[in-house]
Image (cartoon, rainbow, N blue to C red; front, side, top):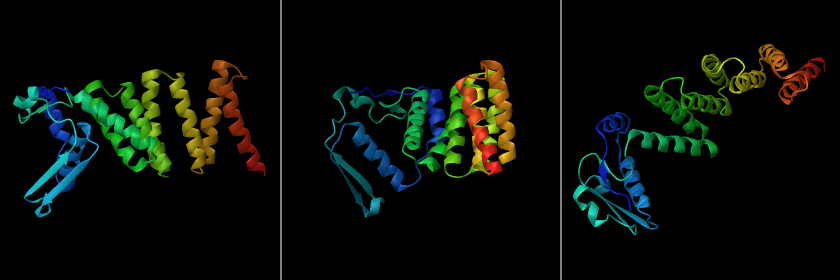
Amino acid sequence: MATIKAIEAKSVHQIQSGQVIVDLCSVAKELVENSLDAGATSVEVRFKNHGLDSIEVQDNGSGIAPANYENVALKHYTSKLSSYDDLSSLRLELANVLFEGGDYRRAGPAYNQLAVDFAVRRGSDAEVVLRSRMQEATCHALVGETTQALRQLEDLLRDERQVYGEHDTRTLELRRQIGLLQLGAGQRRAAEKTLHQLEADLTRLHGAGHPAVTAVTDVLTGLHRSGHG
């Protein structure tokens, strides 16, 4: 069973800045999550006067160990987190779960907030920031918000070129994704320009027979055939 202990002062400020409970649903959610964290398999919630007077939760969880009684009601004490980084890790995990579950409209804002938070603490060029920005743009693309997705990917490409270099695998892959997204958005000329430039760069780097070159060439060949069909 986890020990209830104080969170460091800096982390308290960061958590309070972004975590505010403003409605009855949020209160009930927090209480039920406490039960689940305690290993409960049965949870009963009772509202008195629709929750205005009291909310009571009864469960079959493991409860609080006697050693933690002294700290259980102290301000800024918890058994769940030791620092703000723990919270960020949980939020990243939640964003990934939303994304993998196909809930892109909720995952997008989650990745956006993660990118902002990580940039403040680790710098805007941190890999986790760039990865979160990429995931946010992908969410926009998957819900049909192509213009927004392209804008974000083009901004990201500029930053990745500065961080990783023009010929890094991550930068080249991002250029390919931009070309494909332009094509999907009906921006044929822009897509052809993006993919032709990428094909030339990949050929210089790897040679004409490389799989990465072939993949781009196949897309361009398909474009030319559809244009003449």
